[in-house]
Length: 632
Image (cartoon, rainbow, N blue to C red):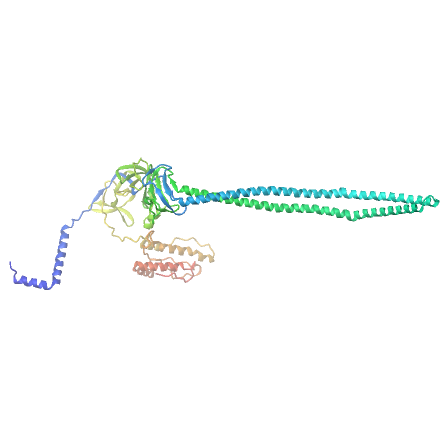
């Protein structure tokens, strides 16, 4: 078929104007899209209703977790410093108590043990030598002290002997000699007299007379000498000898004291040396025993029966981040986890329960556990432990998530399962029998109250209800509904101004509280000077009523803007100084300021609130006449 001239000219114009061609194609595409959407749109669904009835409802909490052994031994390296694994039992092996698990490199440690044994032998020899030296010193010093004591005793004996014996005896001897000398002198005198008489009569010669005279002179001289010797002995020799003996006795005693001091120092030195050697021996022995323990720690045995799980493979605990792979040749530091030996004869499931459900569970609640690897079997269990505080690791990952670690102990006998297997635990909170229930989505909130939309003729009206426990599908209705009522499964959205900012109190409620008449106060009996302090609680109470709706717990960024309380700029006088007038809702000036404040944006209102709280916090206690607290 040939093209007509009009079609040909149209094709040429479209080729010359490609933008027009694209615009026409886009227009056709939009028209086709809306036409197809209108054809395929589903027909509007009419409201669906549920008949309120009584039934049994089980309240439970289902959470996923992992299996963990109830009893688990953690094998750590007690080897000082860094060591290397020479041999290790394969992971997944079932071992008995006493079986060798890990052997660490101890070649250097063996040399240190040998050197320490030599040092211990030397210390032991030095200790024995010091002990014998102390014994010898003790015996030698004992002998020296006994000898010195004898010298003191002998010196005292010599002194007593001289005072009581030798000196009196010498005096007696000298006295006897004088007596004899006197008798001899008398006999010489008598003989001389007799010789003189004989010489006069001629019977004796002159030489005999001279000889008798000489004998008399000798006897007289001997008597004088004996008397002089006695005098010198009593006056000089006896005191001198006695003093010498006394000095010898004193010297002997002083020498004994010096010997005792000197020997006591020697004994103390020998004892100190013995203690030093003994302490050195003890330290050497302790070091030797420690090295032997370290040597024994290089061979780690199983403390109990269990399944070998490497610490680097364990899903529970361990060093998080930068974990060393456990294998032969790997370097291990002291106190590092190497192996975990879980006793798989009794297992538990460790789950994390959200904070919204944690108050519902407690120790002893019944539970049921299913394992992902064998989903067709169910095991009976009980809640063993609920953590007091939220899990810190999950809070680190997500600060807004608060979950509590909960241990569920499996009571039934388990098949051959290993720790770390995924499982699910259902904790039975309670079982409601013949309870009035509705689907969970049938309950909604209207103006802060929980309601259900109940069919009333052709329309549905909201009916306030009191709810109880709930599970994932149904919720208990304690009051508000009766059996047989039809409740809407898809309640309409609330048409009132719903506050989604998380405020605790609304602006209308706050304004209502502010406009309420003040409570009657008791008559004042306090003196005038206490009135300023009486005004302070009123200021605090008003300040508390304003910022109460500032921030909702857990949502610091969702502050609900409210109108701040207006300051009373009119000061009282006299006894009413520092107190405020009751606010009146009919004050046009205050009403105007509130309307201006409510027209501000939430950010501006929050800024005004902060400024107002700052000025109110700087107000002096009790207030003063003419003071203004500021207005937003």
